[in-house]
Image (cartoon, rainbow, N blue to C red; front, side, top):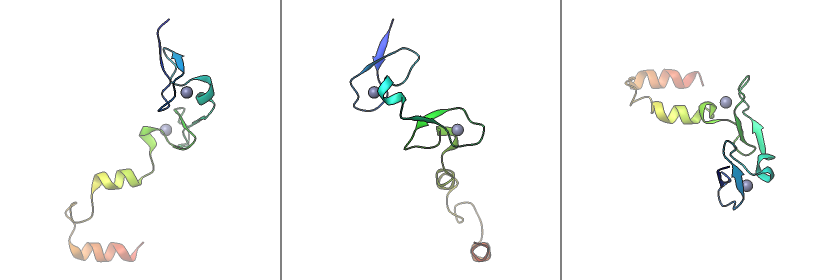
Length: 81
Ligand SMILES: [Zn+2]
Ligand SMILES: [Zn+2]
């Protein structure tokens, strides 16, 4: 059976292939908070890589100027926030 280190950074415990965390750290795993998603994530992360909070997506899209909106549109859209 091939073993590898627990995926928790700094954890020296070995786990079986196919499992990511040692028993101690797998207890700290929860299901992704996204409705219907069955990915396991750390309690502190709350969402899996696919469902990270939308701040991440916003930074990918860039600010309104980078997206090609005029400054007028930026003013108008601000009124709706
Ligand atoms: Zn561990
Ligand atoms: Zn998810």
